[in-house]
Image (tube, rainbow, N blue to C red; front, side, top):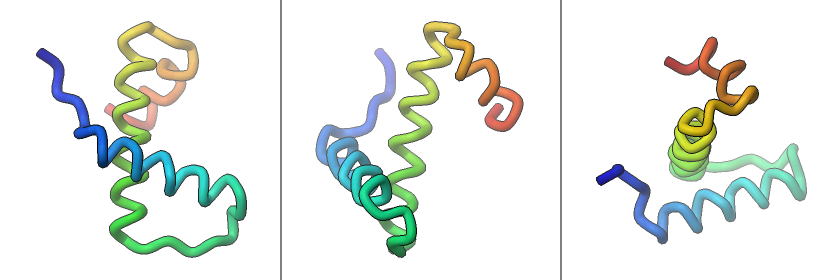
Length: 63
């Protein structure tokens, strides 16, 4: 069984992402930055599982 983020954390991470999309100059808290990082990492793992070209590029930067 895979480790997945709890649904409430995934939703909150997406909310932070949307907030930054709407206004990139918006400042976010360290907590929000952490939530965003967890959400992006989970998304990266999903991409990597499917051998996506984007995941291949990111794998240079994220082990």
